Structures are given as C-alpha cells and as structure tokens.
Length: 186
Image (cartoon, rainbow, N blue to C red; front, side, top):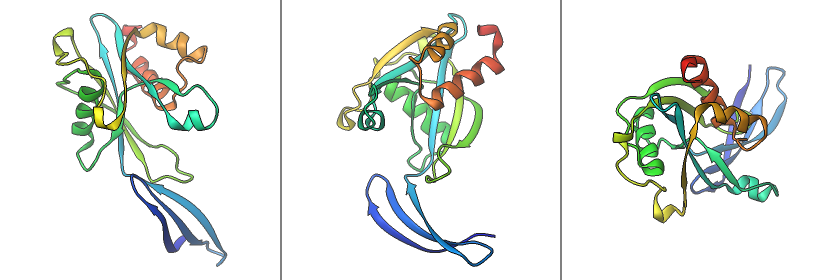
C-alpha cells in the first residue's frame, strides 16, 4: 500500500509542478515529481468516402529542447479545460483544422505519462465530409500555434509511421485505433 504524505508545489502556471513525499507499505519514504495540467483529448478526423485523415503540423517544444525535429505531424489534440472530453475534442478539431464535427466515436482513455503526470487522454475517431469544413483552421492566434492542416490518404500514414515521419505516440495510437475499428478504410 502506498500513501502520499505531503505535496509541495514548486511551480503553478499552465501546469503545476509538485514534489510528493510517498510512503510505501514497509514505511519507507521517497519523493516523486508530479506534473499536473488536467485532462486532454486527441481526435482523429477521417473522411470515409475519400479514405483520408486530417492531421496537423506544428512546433513542439519538447523535441526542440531535446535537439530533435521540432515540427511534428499529429492528430488534433489539447486540454479539456474543464469541458466534457467530447466537447473539448470537437473544439480542438475546429480550432486546429477548421472542421466542425457532428459525431465522435470514443476510442479509449489512457494515461499519457503515468510515471510523473496526472494527464489522462481521451481518444476519439470522427468521420467528416468536405461539407464539414467551416474555416481554414490553424489554431488560436494568441497561443502562437501556427498550425498547418495536412490531409493524407489513410494508408499512407502507416508508411509514415514506419519511416519516422509520424513519430508522435498519441497519433500512432489513434491511427491504429482507426485501422482496427474501420479496416475497410485501408
């Protein structure tokens, strides 16, 4: 049995960073770091008639800091900001891609980095048609997202996973979920 005895907040901003003192069943104490910014969503918009998916390309600070390519190709995603996951997913897709979704299909809920983060990401698949595009997308200007909307044949995404052009874990997961649930799209 484990118990958190004490939590110290080190930083409180977009995310909160804390140090927790944990006690195990033998009475030993140790410290763990916690990052908390709330829940998140990831949605894969796909056009079943044209057999394509819509992804976004944007800069990511983690890979930039690690010295890797900072421009990643990803499924639209973001924080729930207190909204129900389905609503937050629709909002994120419209902000990032300009597609107004009618329905979303749940595709799981998973811990992103359970070793240090409280984030649980809710995954969705969402069929759309060309008539569902209501804007160019591109993200929210004041957040400096500078998002490029990319529409790709679904089958091509698996080649891109194999050769490393798609290397974002949540995107790989949601693409595989689409392949498992809707294999006719391949």
